[in-house]
Image (tube, rainbow over all chains, first blue to last red):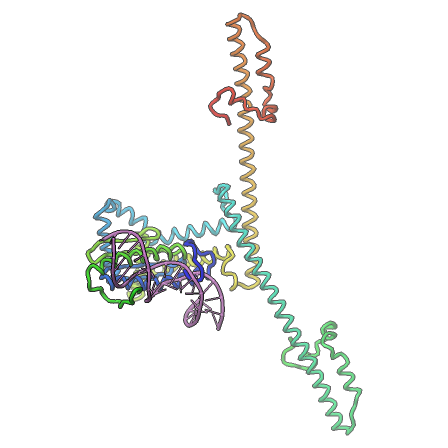
Length: 219
Length: 219
DNA sequence: CTGCCTATATATAACAT
DNA sequence: TATGTTATATATAGGCA
């Protein structure tokens, strides 16, 4: 209804659906309250999110409104006779149980179990659903892998640079110590230590200089 | 809210109040329906006008939504009541609720939603699960197709045999009639009709003899 | 009441943070 | 995920028929 007009059908994207639910729910409750105040109406509004979370509003008492509603139903129809039956069908426990059964069956079908009872059309739809899910899993997995690889490479580069710096420092330190002790600079030691100070070369021959130097984090 | 902004308080003028009630009520119900569709939510909306007239809407069954709502209320009451019996029911309720949430999440992951929070190991397992499911779906679908094809071929064979028999019968009948009329057998007619009486050949050239013979079921 | 019209007030979809 | 922003889509107050 704003940047672009939308079709009134289930929103595919989960995140978008949740955001829209949150926003529109607020709007709906606001409108309900306004109507009850402006026009002195008695209103009850019950909303369950797709995940079963409850949101409700009643201008007076929810029970009052519901009872009033039931009275209207009884007045105008045959429900009073079936009430016992319906109560059994609709009782809380059965409601939840049925929901669980439904979801369980759906999961089983997604896992490829209990397919015998499905017809060809059902199977085609299920295949499509499963393919979509699998492709998204594979896509996210690939992204995750690339991310880890990138992160590791970055860490590696950083560590190689650190190593290089530390070796240089150590070389400098040794040179200064020798200068102090002998009053003479010693090029030979510096040369030895800095011999393999190229990060790339260190990486290739796997020499772990940091360990030898007793640094806190070998990795 | 349009020509002029209004305060949210009871509208004094009766006529204006009724008009506003009618207009806003429609808007409210429209919004409720949109929300239920867009976000897959379960919604019940009950409105009584100031004069006691009822308007209601429920995305599924009003009774179901109200039952579910009552359940939530009972669940909350039990937190304060602490009765042993109630606590047990409370546990049962929570047990079922958690089961639903868990299955819902699992289903979403199978559909490729909400994958961002999973680590690489989870994703690998999920991929395996999805692959297994998909492959079984495809396998069963193939079996179902082969079964249908087999069944159709069997039916075809049966029909071809029937056709063959019928043609023979018809030929005999015609020959008898001719014999009766002319007191003489006519080999030529029999030969004409039975010329392509081989079922396989019939199938190949797609001649629909059953139709020509005026049989009830062309297929 | 009901519906239609039009100027505004609101709600909100797509982004951004 | 939650909140804020903005451009549009809707809803609707006040009239009128």
